Amino acid sequence: MENHSQNGTEALLKVSTLNCIDLSNPDIHQSVSLLKQACLDCGFFYVINHGISQEFMDEVFAQSKNLFHLPLNEKMKLLRNEKHRGYTPVLDELLDPDNQVHVGDYKEGYYIGVEVPEDDPDAEKPFYGPNVWPEDGVVPGWRQTMEKFHHEALEVAKAVARVIALALDLEVDFFDKPEMLGKPIATLRLLHYEGQVSDPSKGIYGAGAHSDYGLITLLATDDVMGLQICRDKDAKPQIWEYVAPIKGAFIVNLGDMLERWSNCIFKSTLHRVLGNGQERYSIAYFVEPSHDCLVECLPTCKSEDNPPKFPPIRCATYLSQRYKDTHAELSVYNNHQT
Image (cartoon, rainbow, N blue to C red; front, side, top):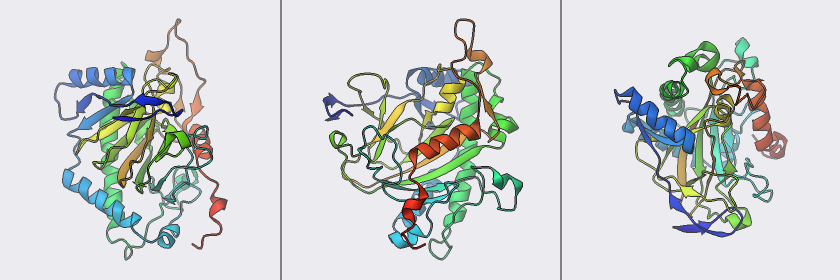
């Protein structure tokens, strides 16, 4: 399989071989070993037997399509708010400004976060608050499906985080604490790539090259190939490998926050999406600890020879800056009637 590398040079692209973690495997040591190898190597792996039924996953994808098939004027009524909830139009997000020549991603999306009523004190926090929901008559049953998936995906993320904790020589429940995943910032993002053909030599991508901001990301995709990873972002030219979709599996990757937490022992890897002319749907679930969690070098990841590389930072401070850097100002949409 051939394509262009990011700088336009011809490079052979292959399909990546990733480790597969079976969450139903009673041999936890095997799971920890496989996950640790993946995290040291490329920061990407598959998770299977995670407890969410295929039937329900199919329903979530069907409801995602129902929303994206609405007319644009209906979707713009659901435009994302200041707290990143709701609809994000095509070209709203610019993930790789050096290579995307001031054109954003050729994808539309929909953000759903932790539902917190406006009158709740927690709603003051930047990543908590009420979601933007379509009226039930517009997409029947949509909210119920997405809220159920948000809840079930969080349980999968917590199960993966327990294996990660063991792989980092921490207590198994390290990430279960209230200040960690007890009150997480967990964001579901539905994505629709409209069938555009990417051309890296012209800076045109389904999603530009980026690493994720947070702790971990769970990704469910349809059967259309598109996701690529770059194991060594400093290589010249960069070598990109496709990640094959596996039905029923989540593709899991580590985020920058976990790389920072682990003192760069575990990797947050550059990835992107190339369109091949086919429509593509995916569902990403981004998991971060609570707003007030202090992200500082883990005790098992530092030593005299390997002191902390980053100062401590509050989770909310870190995430707010990362979102601001990659999304268009909402004022650009003021001409749209909502």
